[in-house]
Image 1 (tube, helix red, strand yellow):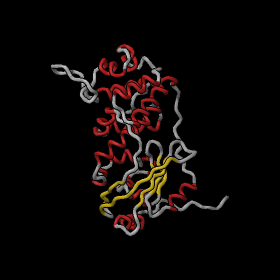
Image 2 (spheres, rainbow, N blue to C red):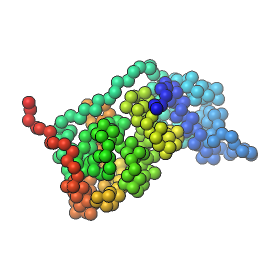
Image 3 (spheres, one colour):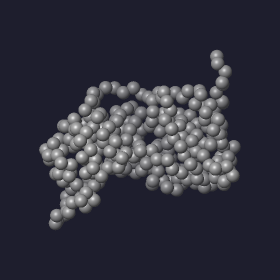
Image 4 (tube, rainbow, N blue to C red):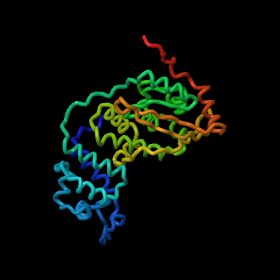
Length: 295
């Protein structure tokens, strides 16, 4: 099962509908009238009024029939919906895409990881580290980088994906004490990617699988929340080394199709560093070290 393909205007409309139904009238400064409201969140006419546009114009945007909203309208809608900076930027990106969208077959992103990046993964040991694709496929890793996600090595290398692990691996709920928070952030990042490339084959395959197999994913996907990447510590309840809290740093890799490197660190001399070192020592080696000699 794969999510249906849709144009840039459809994706803009989908995002606006989701955010409108999740914005309460009171939080927007409106006083709800008497009686039971049939519409969750704001009505279309309420949002149009708050944004200073006509009801007909806003309705056409939300139905995907108006695909050229001006930057001023986009900003006004963002203010009315009380979007944060990441959501505001996402709305802007959707509007830009809607205006220039031309359906075409998207190529599958490359999964190739250059040898020098694999050397870098080895160089940062014992810090767990990995390279992931834009849709969170694990493309390369050092021993701790894979072992940190306990049980993910049960799957073939081509199936190892951090989103798939969070929602479908039976160990994930035990490994992440804050599993609910982890899955919200995961879905929000995938939603942000879907806003700018909804028909990418890597994304549609993953989302289709998760919609079919995970009710938790399906529920969060419909909320259409987006977020930027946030630097934060992550806590794991690991079956081999116990509780371990590590600082995380993610970085985009130049010259790739959205690949990112993630590295976990801990202060030397702390119990977390000792646990990290133990994990690196006991984990299965990722693969033979790439040669540094030129052929």
